[in-house]
Length: 199
Image (cartoon, rainbow, N blue to C red; front, top):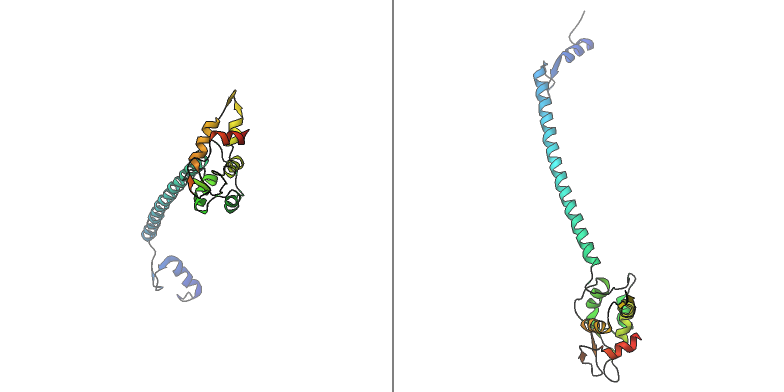
């Protein structure tokens, strides 16, 4: 005898009828399943659109970052000077300032010159001499940290790439020296002291 509360009978009823949250059995309808499927498809389609939009925004931001980085790298390669600054990756600015008697006020200008290849002012050399100005630290500095002196000596296609007159003008645009009284001298390098150093 088949009773509705026997396990097998209950299972058959369960299989034939759907139930809601309160476990109240109702007749199964294909319409409800189709509506749920359509609703799921719509949600998936909407979320897919949102995800694609987010990905596009991230792609645009990544493109802008790449462009900015490329532009920055190109600017770093460019120099304000017609000579090259030698590779100074292990440079300690305090040592350079001490070795060449560079004023503490010129630290940021020196950093721009050596590390960024930019002219942001004049580097002040503070070593005093008995007469006039001491040009030796200035010329030593340019000889060690730039290739300006080599360019005055080397010949390209039979011609010197930078003349001594040009080199003197370049150095004087970048430096200031102090005389024996501590007064700044705007053009400490001249043709005489430069040619003595180069020869």
